[in-house]
Amino acid sequence: ATENELNTTLDALRRQAAPVEEELARTEAERSRQEENERQTQQALRKDESNWNNARLQLQRTEDALHQLQHEIEQDLGFVVVEQSDSLAYQPPLQLDAVMEQLPILDQLPDGFESEVRETRARLSRLTNVNPEALREYEEAAERHEFLTTQSADLEKAIADMRKVIKELDELMEEALQRTFAAVSEQFVHFFQRLFNGGTAQLILTTPEDITNTGIEIIARPPGKRPQSLALLS
Image (cartoon, rainbow, N blue to C red; front, top):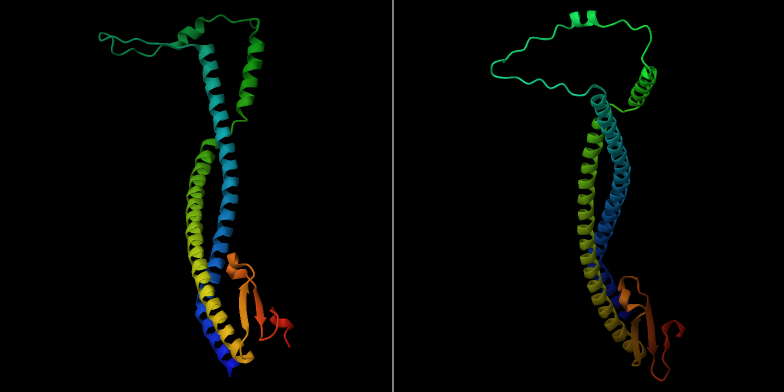
């Protein structure tokens, strides 16, 4: 009868702890899923950051090349500034045909002209390496980078919230296990003394600081015997 009573008590205590254990298992699984999502998002974020940096570098190179070309054109051609006055609000376009007819015909090119042509061609050739899509690619990379950064922050917050829930469930589990252990220990001592008509018995947690993973050591001393492990009793 005493064994049946003990089993009944243990079953009741297990039923009380079961919902907490199930909720803890579900929460742990959800946390693992969230952490995997964060890992994948962080991986995608690192990849897009690399693409974003490359696009930004390409855009900078394009802008530098355009500025250099603009500077060279200004150096070669200079600026023509036309000043207008109130008395001359409109100036007719220059008649260049007559000017062109008066230009001399050259029998040979001026010194250094061929060199300037080669340099100009070389500059134009370098400009062909400029990526015309650099600005668009940069804007797309920046937009995706911002999206992934926001998503990563949301996932980190979700994981932090999940860890908080798990911590609370761990505390509830520890409290439930402490109550269960105390009740079982009390019942064990009671039934042991009834079975052996006296004596002492004790249940000891092997690692009380980690009750969810602890083992239980049983110390018992029937009347007239030395304390020993219950497993050694016959």
